[in-house]
Image (cartoon, rainbow, N blue to C red; front, side, top):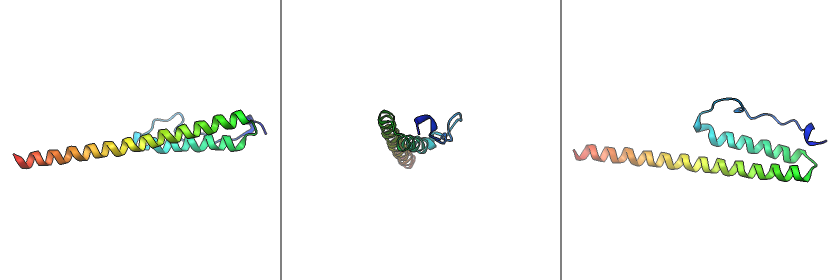
Length: 89
């Protein structure tokens, strides 16, 4: 089996617009696809490339999740500050 014989399902977001809220999940799907490539090949260079790509996709997903949490926290602080300002007036 060579790398051309590996059937990897295309991520659902290929060719589609997506909601930024789905960003981390889509990155995880891409990481899973890369792991499938790594597991299905006998070529060391392809396996190494796919494993590296999977790690990078996971890092992007982690970053997207952290950004989402930070944005929610900022939004929450803003709502809290607005409520305090309304009470003061």
